[in-house]
Length: 253
Image (cartoon, rainbow, N blue to C red; front, side, top):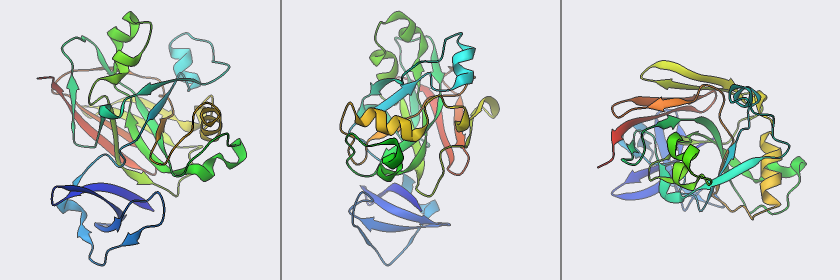
């Protein structure tokens, strides 16, 4: 199943994609919902970020090849940080290049959306708490990341967490190809099988620290090939079985 969040009559609404149409649902996919009778042409609506999360937990250095690329040893435990919900934008929205940075990088990632409250869950049951999966670009002001001892400024600018275009529920996250294209040129390519800590491990581990709630997002790390973007660029994050998250880069006003 594919869940989308879209704008209709100026209001955000959830729906289910069936080929070229959306069947609206109410209230949302995180519990019991009702469907409407009349489908809407997919091409006739503006897609929003597929979820507005309460929190975004992002995992760093989680691909073996990316760790090797940076000359780092594999971490013994997941390394993670958080992005603010205000950083979230959807596919086709613009990434704002902030004036205080001179290097803004793309980081293509698989993201998962929590479907129900998770606290102290086991690895064996972790996937039961995942609603589905979407694409993410963990946009990073690399120069500020190097400068600061904490990553919140480098990772937390408005528009620095594009996710979308939708949430796919029936997907095995263990072996998916991830690619990133900058102006049509392949810059990143990896596979989730190269993750140091897989999705069940991450959900279980994070749930030992904080309660995960419906709609929360976990981004799972990036494969090698991260690099800079410039105003005027177009960046595509493509994940097997999900689709393409596309954003342009513009100079912050």
